[in-house]
Length: 127
Image (cartoon, rainbow, N blue to C red; front, side, top):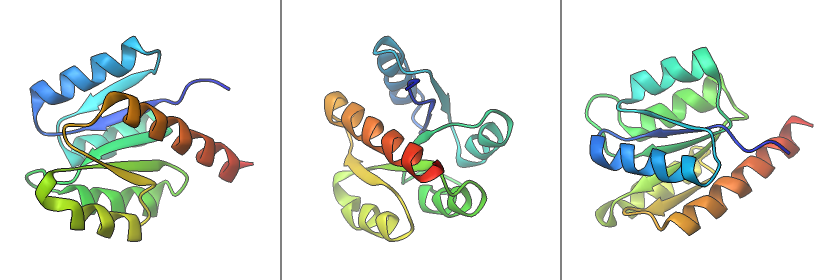
C-alpha cells in the first residue's frame, strides 16, 4: 500500500513547517496549508488521503473546515489537533466525522500511528 498523502493545516507557520518536515522525513508525502480556505483549495486540486487539522484558526476554524471536507470528500480522513483547553472541540469534531484527535503539541509517534490507522480506514471504505 502506498503511503498516505497527508495535508497538515495550521495557522502557526513555524509549527506547520516543522510538522510537515518531520512527516516527510518519515516517508509520508506531506504538504502544508496555513488556512482552512487554502486547505480546501489544495484538496480540490490535488486530493489527499488524510488531513491533520488544527481546530483553532482565524477565519474558517477547524470544525468548519471539517464539515466542508466531510460534505465534499467523505472518504478523506481528518485528525484534529486540539490545544489543552479545547478537548471539547476535539470531541465535537469526532461527532462531525473526524477520525480522531490529538493534543498539541502532538507526539509524533502517536500522530504517525493515527495517520496510518486513518489511511487504513480510508482504504477499507473505498473498497
